[in-house]
Image 1 (cartoon, helix red, strand yellow):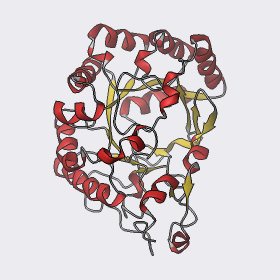
Image 2: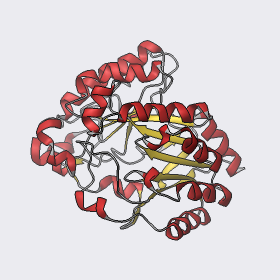
Image 3: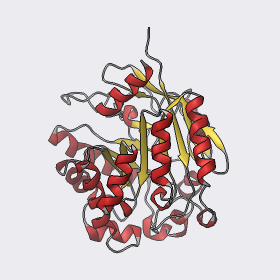
Image 4: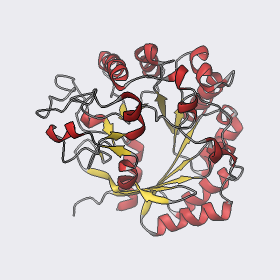
Length: 350
């Protein structure tokens, strides 16, 4: 019997946060809204499991500000979720007791938002002195407790020149599961645009340099988000959500594990699947009709095109050669899930 892709449910608890990142895409008004009551969060998690979800991703805002988070994680695992993930800035996880409580409750993975490899670089972007030290302490706490960890880096003018050094440092420190995210020009990113503004072309050059550091170390390269394939030809297999099937996740044997149609985003204001979310706010310049990916690509962010125009989006005449050609041990398709996740998901589907 063929494997059935696992269903993922991403639960947003609310948008309150204890950092003030210059590039944050969340709108100011959202952060004043209260978190979901525990009963609502638990009901949504239970309903998602009943409907077939087996991975729960808890997001915000900053979900560690949610007082009943430990209780929610424990409820999710007792309900039957094989994996419970957390997207976090890591500040509260610097407390070893708090980190241990979440792992005991059943937390299996946390992705940390860390935007540089030094306190000066990271703290300047979060506008919270000491945030780098706390985030890294939190990451080390979870690693020491046996949880999986990853790092997300939001690209902007402040960290772009150091991106290769930053990502190489992450790998050297044992945090090689890295995501590189191009910012959305809304929320704080729009407000602080004068300090953070960058173009896709600038970001693409820095991404290539970062990938070279992963190749030099023989490490699995990052995933990419909010970047169209025409600015990074050959990197399509690492870019999420640029077109049909581009949010799918595979294991090493190319078995489909997560289908975008089975990834649900459950926000306080509305719920939608990942495929629907991927096309929101996108526009397609007329020149895209000549691209080899015209039928697959969703286009690009309308707010970005309004600021910079469409000149960077050069139609691709043919499918480009994968970046991974000659890169020993690396595949051009995504292998986004960790070994422990594979094992837990397969056990849940058995």
